[in-house]
Length: 210
Image (cartoon, rainbow, N blue to C red; front, top):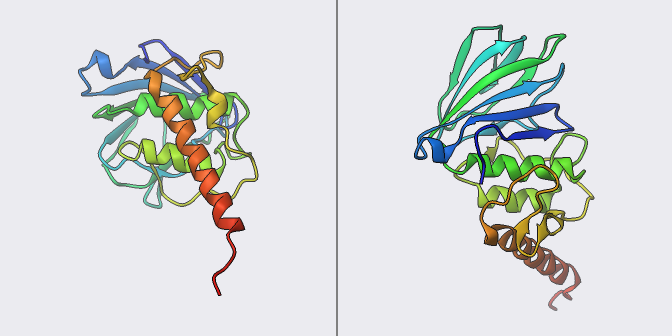
């Protein structure tokens, strides 16, 4: 379970998240954190929060925000709000590390999504853009479809599914800086990934009907 003060790092995208208030601190009303990004750092993909409003305040640095294709460059002290259902992303376009204060309302299970997504990146299970392979990404997005959707499909990847390697006795591996959340969650994701892979293999080898 995430706690205020926890730190998550994504080595590919250059993001570092420090949680200030998590869901259990606010009775699920709000998730708040500081996101630090090195020059050029940005989220792995343009995305959508179907049911959540996301508010940004630039604490330091120069950050370009893109919402539904429109672009704005903000500096320290400036803010922007992304309503639910709007495709968005951002990037540090300055020469120094940027810090953005982020509030996501309601919290839902967003912190658990970040733990999963950043954990795979920390284990080296993503491509050069910071995204897992298609099968793993499909499983994650199905699990967290209320919190996160991609604005466009990710590019193909030849990497094998990596979700089962995150498990140990049915729990998330904590060595990569992530915390154990719900004990059955990792097992469920791994089983689902394995079933999908097995079905794909059967479809590929099935003889066509005459």
